[in-house]
Image (tube, rainbow, N blue to C red):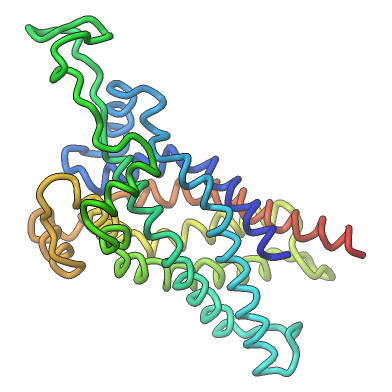
Length: 304
């Protein structure tokens, strides 16, 4: 049932956090933005609300599978470790067991998420400018002529984006940035599940086996924020590598992207979007974990 609970929790989480994810990706990939509010104002002024939801349909369709695999892999890996080390899958795991299972969960999801991440990043960074209301080139909103005044976006949607990337860049294009994604998700998911387990233990009232709803909300939110805090440097590199297919290719690989980015923008570039990531992760993972735990409890009640 961990697979089902993870799937439901993942869908709820992406519904809450996607607009801020779009802002995060644009801040990380477009140097013109000086901060969160600058990006938000510019996106809303040029593209209105829809601009924050670019590429949403593909994550909604796939996040249930990815989240299901993440939580299911974690639980099954942890059960196997406990069975091997302690003789029972129900034994209390050590912190090292939780860390290893969380890392395995993060690594497994890379193979599923890389094409989705490529499409999401390309669509999020593909801006559509609204016609200017002033100046010599001002035209009516419908922009009837000439055609060049209304540029057609390269990608018409997630599936078209994936097909275009595969045709122009081959299978490697769909897995661009997967090395950075692997580094990002491996240690961040280890942090994610370990911090959640520790916080749940701290927040469990005396005489109870698990925390109440408020405890789960706090533990889930803090776990998500901590995970993104350690994931942000590789997330920046991942986003830049995946966006590096629109126009001339700049980066030859992970190390070249990291060195070039730091040389051009300083060490602080690796922490672009850090505050936004943590702020977004808190409510998203509150929803993910409280939904996950609620579905698990409901299915246990129905089966007993």
